[in-house]
Length: 472
View (tube, rainbow, N blue to C red):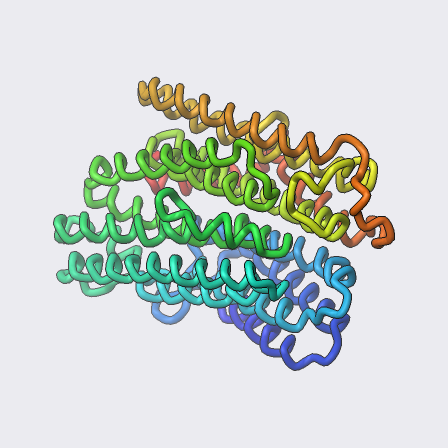
């Protein structure tokens, strides 16, 4: 099954470049995404056997991350036909082809059990995402694509150095598989491991968009189409988050938790703080969402740094954030196609011009800012609880303070866009809201809402198991 789940999007991506018409490529994307999702769902019942001498295996971290982006891809495959239909004269060849290849590389990330293979898979996601960011072929989009490639490549190069240092620290081990490193962590060279941890944290932190390596994110998210923003923010960042989970597992096994903890806390709080102030008065809606993503990446890393209940909260927040951010980026895609602008000043009266999209915009605002009953509220509360249990009262205070600023900034912007009358420049003659542009919003919004009301027992068990592996 592992070869099947990898081969399916790879073959689909190759086929998408050969198919002649948009409709056939959209059907292909939908079918591959659906089969991929069903296959991933079956893994929760029957876990596939490892292959290639353990290089590819699905552990508890992997199945959580794999399930997140498989569901996101399915939602995007539902959304894409109506989006492309409103982009008159544009082919979806590049879109469908690169999306399926990206699904392949992200699946490979979740299955990789060797640090070198993991690095190759993460690097491939960077290269495959670049053509998707430049979809609109504008000068700013091209500039954002190059900035994304250059900065993420520097980050990924640092991660490669970290991987080399990890290999040097494990020179006495027979294998570099993650399981082997964890089980024989007492044989690791601690100085090399510490050096490796710093380079890996900075390298994969760049891919997540943590401060101070975040500068690519506002430009890339600002220029990417809504569906690509959903995958970048909800799916791709979780691939880098997976690297942090494996790094913490190794450091914990080598009794180096206290070395890594302050690094994570600094990255986490700095990201939340900078994002909060950057959102105030933000004039571009997608750039606002980019800073929101930086804030949430900070929350994830902060939870890992706090440890204990913070591990569960961080893992749960990764799920909630992925679907809430997927929701709001697809909403932004609908708004852009209606107003042909991402400038907040040019967008007013969304509730009047597109009532359903406007309703989802308000719901998404509550979801991304962590307002009950959405799941983000409970995962952020768990991380606050972890700070209080660790007696980090100052950290808990600033955590709440910055989240309050985030709420004010996002609510102020979104309410301006939702209320009032549409401006004269809005595209009155564009197509009305179609089920294809709304159903994915309902799917993603429904998941975040339900996770706030009830966590399924199978998911709760997996989160408990994963946080237990991390030491929670």
